[in-house]
Image 1 (cartoon, rainbow, N blue to C red):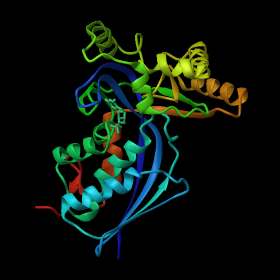
Image 2 (cartoon, protein in one colour):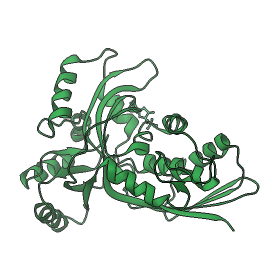
Image 3 (tube, helix red, strand yellow):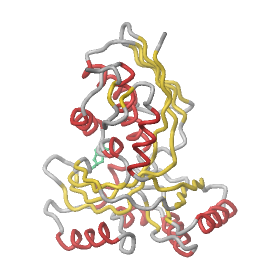
Image 4 (tube, protein in one colour):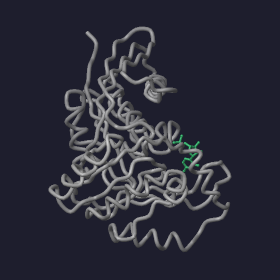
Length: 309
Ligand code: C5P
């Protein structure tokens, strides 16, 4: 009998995002505040011992699939062989700045080792995660977190209330690597922006900035109009997420958020409209403990194999 598990893989937004400078390794030095949200893909994972074979079924054809890559890295690290099958139901828009692929990779890192009966310590998972993509480590932790360096050095920030948010996706596909290049950052950091970022990270939303807006909004002015409209409808803040192209607004209450959702839906069929809620670290971990309850011990993070010594 194969071992089976079904997990939800949550999306993120960046509550603030500063790109400081180019680094010698080709990446950019970041300061960002990550936040998990309730929008989620569903991933079913099945494992059966035998020769190694990794298969994925999804309605979407996702190039260079990060899920398969992650499964191979977990099999290699745990020394197990076998057939790993995935069924992916995608709800998180692709290339929208919401970390969908990264979240799927982290979901495999969290769920597959207990399914194989071979738990891996958080240090090993973080290392594998950073090798898979800059946003992957965050999804091992969840909630609100400060990301620095490539975005892989993470520190927890206090949980924020589960505020309602609205995500708007226009039919625009912005490329992450191109957005970084378009910023034309120097190779030395910019101090004043760090001070301003601190104010935002400590103080909540008032001064939120996403440095990518400058270059992405120039190319796609319709995204700037979405931001303006969200602000007008009472969002604070309204900001692009990651390198785009989704724009989100955070609202004080559900009624206000739902009214805004309705107006965007009416305005154009081009918009995909996603009403969501911010998910705190404690809720994120409770979700993961529930998801892995059949396979793991409850008190540790990440959830460990219940039968491990
Ligand atoms: O790490 P990840 O594969 O998600 O990054 C995609 C691309 O985004 C990188 O190849 C790089 O061009 C750019 N990037 C960057 N600095 C970062 C993160 C990503 O320049 N901190």
